[in-house]
Length: 439
Image 1 (tube, rainbow, N blue to C red):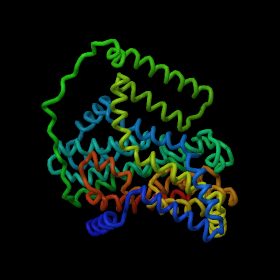
Image 2 (image 1 turned 90 degrees about the vertical axis):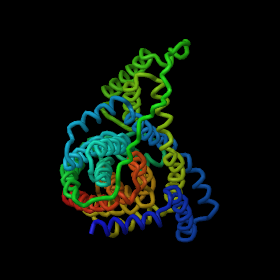
Image 3 (image 1 turned 90 degrees about the horizontal axis):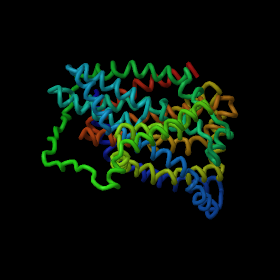
Image 4 (image 1 turned 45 degrees about the vertical axis):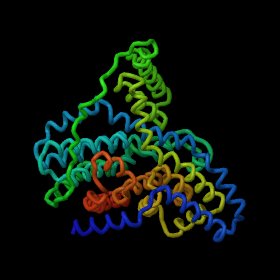
């Protein structure tokens, strides 16, 4: 059954799933069509609303780029690599490999989703090199299933967005109010499903260990003709490689962070990004070395950087055409205070097929979900987290964020899709049940 499902979805994804940027363009034209021909808005006016809205999410887009780039750079640092090697040393059987990979990936993804994706792939690959004949496809899939908890963690886009002071359309979605992390990430409504998934996903993945995959790890030989490290000779080179300068700056960063936390007593998107930026610099011990790795990490940020302005344009058209109000009224008409979070969860999962981004979800779904939540008396934190959980859940069949995992592992999406579908089914039961009975 798993083989049939995996093969079916792999072919479906490979044949019909274009790049996520293409979806943004198609969604832009869809919104324009609905605005003009359904809502009766003037074409020129809607075009202007789109153009004027393009740059309203630039601060948020930069935050998203930084969270991805700092995470990838941190995952590539020597301290993280040494920790992973230490963990791998305790793994001796296939069952242990699957459980350890799932747990490590889940915990790290909760702390920082970008680090978790890369770390999960690395530890899966290292274990596969150590244990002969291990189910490598399942091992990599186990690493990716840890991504299920990312949007309920410390780097979750939506909870951090609504906890960060902002202006404009994003601020309007919550009535200009800040929603603290105590109402989202650290609420029992959130950490109950997180704990259930962290405890059950290793068991689920372990139970699939006898369903073999043809995927194999590609062992890459270490480079023999490496370039020897040259010692710094000029004053400029010494300054660039100065550990003293690096740690003085890191100390300054953390002094500010502790001071800010003491004064405000809260954590937001900017705090998290600066924290991991400083931690990365400390791990590299050199500003130049960190900058070099940061540049490499920026390559994976291209999709995020180019797409977010168009999400902002789509959001602007929705809000000025009345589409957001119409969809809100639809939800108000069919939902109740008790069922709206569940409906939002499933609609967010569907949206993720077209917009594989938590921030993009907030820009597109926030304008109609939040007004509906207010009208029905649903706490704004619950409505926002329903969007977040739906996006995280659907990532199991949306291959966009599997790209960095597969790139490190050297596999194709078809090698892990069958296992991810099983994880999707189980996690869907867990999340829908928690949302319905706890919220």
